Image 1 (tube, helix red, strand yellow):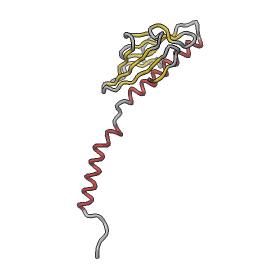
Image 2 (cartoon, rainbow, N blue to C red; image 1 turned 90 degrees about the vertical axis):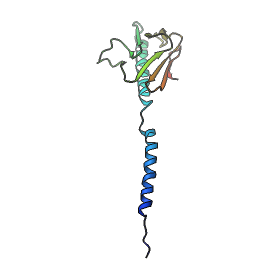
Image 3 (cartoon, rainbow, N blue to C red; image 1 turned 135 degrees about the vertical axis):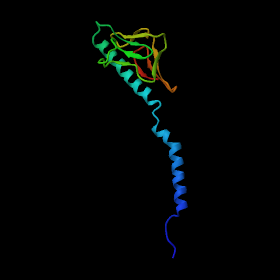
Image 4 (cartoon, rainbow, N blue to C red; image 1 turned 30 degrees about the horizontal axis):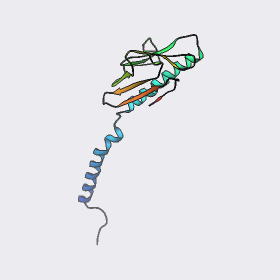
Length: 144
């Protein structure tokens, strides 16, 4: 009588193959490189759009954001300021001009000061992955 099923050797070979696949494919699914700069870029876009909208609603005020190597947002840079990004681990900012940079907006939402003709803010992770955030001369803030 012949029994049905797998031999011990076949089961061990299958487990070894699954182990090799898990070791080689695992980092692709569980590595977070690139995600932190993506999250910071989305947050930076939100902050800049908020400042832009405030400048368009209140045309008498001066609304601007400051960009330095490790901060972006509205001063003062304190813990409870929700319109700032500061000291994010492994992410640095660079600007198409010189740092620190001031990006203001006029009553029509167009950038002023150091970004009047359009500018690019680059976010770079320590792993080398970089993402760009563009502000064009008409005030459109987007990923580029």
